[in-house]
Image 1: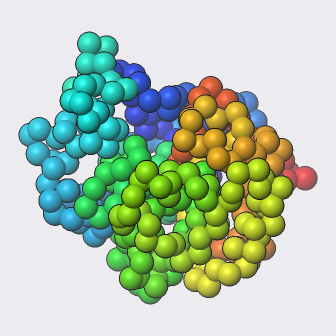
Image 2: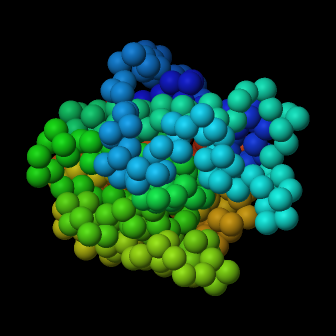
Image 3: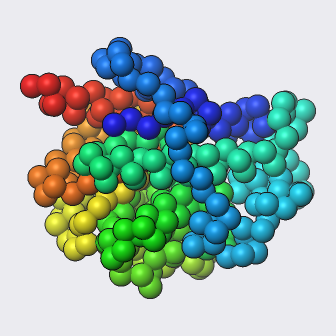
Length: 323
């Protein structure tokens, strides 16, 4: 089950934001999948559950949520993407190139969260769903960080738990960066365990980041040092074996550990395309062999090649189904 709608695309360039997240990583992946599955259709926006202010408050502070609904909500986007530097100059942002009101990007993030929730519903009903959206694992209780305005992962888990009482979640985060927001939001909540395999010394754990809530540990943290790519799969397998909740899983499937990713702050892990497929299939087969519903979301992935990582995984499991 693939969850995609062209309106999920953030269209950052149309807002004048110059961050190398290419919207076509989701659309390109979807269109290539349509060649394999001709009846594959976009989800109708009208079919997606609403994400309300009350849903956001399950996770985020009222002060943060109020900012997202304020008249001057553009400031929330400026803070999220760090569009103004310490000198007060524009950074990765050119308002002269903006076609759309910056504050309207908030609605895009909420729409992506609706897509994540649909992915969770699909996984719960069918066993597997992949959302070509979401994965904003740096969003914290009281602040937006790391291009993540809100934390759709934990918002959707908590909303789902409100309907499916006592359901325990395992968050499996395989993005290059530590899932610091998810760890902070759940560190006193045993019903949601978090596994994060990430750069040991990179952002948000580098020395220049200092101390802060981004250092709150995940339930299972697996740091990968530079040039430890040959140990990655072994360490991931060991981490998966330590999970205890395993009633339903959300996989935060960042493509940024890929050596073809262009984000400078993700260079601490350089997995080949083949290793990336092994990574994804390892998680997929681990969960499938235990009959654990698995909802996958995109998370980080930067530059023109990362769509291939999602596509090769989905193509592989499609071929497995047909064999």
